[in-house]
Image (cartoon, rainbow, N blue to C red):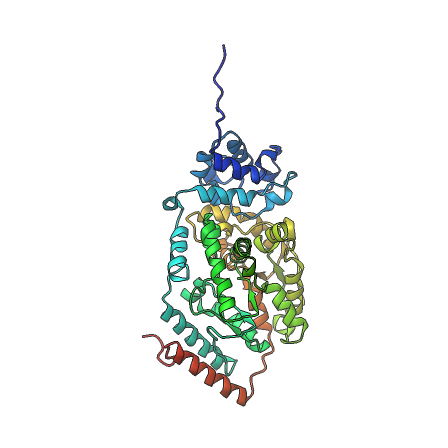
Length: 443
């Protein structure tokens, strides 16, 4: 007596079949290497679903079941599976496409609202322009009074050498975290600027599979560079921000080859100003502490995979210029584990699942015995510093941005009186032009 098959294969919609064919899904050997190396495997909420099973579901035409599941959103897009795949399948790109197919009103949490905000207001949090500028003026005054006389935050500066994009969470609430880069720019005597509009660093379009948003956000950065004749853009620090920006710029260049601009990754920039002697560092301020480095997935594996160079050695060299005691995690570099916050998992409503994903990174940190974990991504920073202690109570380490470590180690030489006077005059003219009274403060 014949039995009906448990699953009846069906054809994928034409567009989806074409897209998945271009991503070589048909090459999958079902070997399970992807699932074996994925920290999301075993997540309770997924009810036994893992990336190998997802690929089999897609092979059987069950695309709706995958798109409507939690899997594409709990997947951090870390690329560990893709790095190990014998057939070179690009899992993060495939999961990004699954996100793309989800109805926008069914995108989990605040991510799609953030995309709408950045498209409408220029930043994910919807911070009004006057509040943004007042924050820059007010916090800039604090830095000037603290250790950098003559410092101010230059906005829309013509012919600057460097364009820098703030992270909206810092502008919204984590004000102190903006100061680290500012101190570095001051010590290096950098000719830099930030935008007055469309200043968001982080690309939530990447997190939601919104290709159009990624394209638009990159185009805005390109237009800012050309409008003010700026020499170089520092790629945003957030792994998703920098990777999304790079992907968006690739789209823009395909549309118009003239849209190409000069950019530099934060690690390249920091190595450059240290090696050239533009900034000086004092290791002694970090004596008695052991430091380790967290390899960001997007700054490492994914950049290496898609653009030919992952930033593994540069951050380690930078840290070694600041400290005497450094120890690597195991595994590290291309084999390192994701923190669990990638793919938008820091703000998404999957905190427990994100922490479970991060258990492997937590174990790697603890095994080093390090006092300080150094990171190069804002989401990694918050995940390791804020989320891990809620789920793993013996988190007895500090977490620092790599630019924070440099700022803490700086030997700052103040401007002379003449240059201070000149800078203060420039600041006064700028804030008057922008309609901001730096002395007013917040009510």
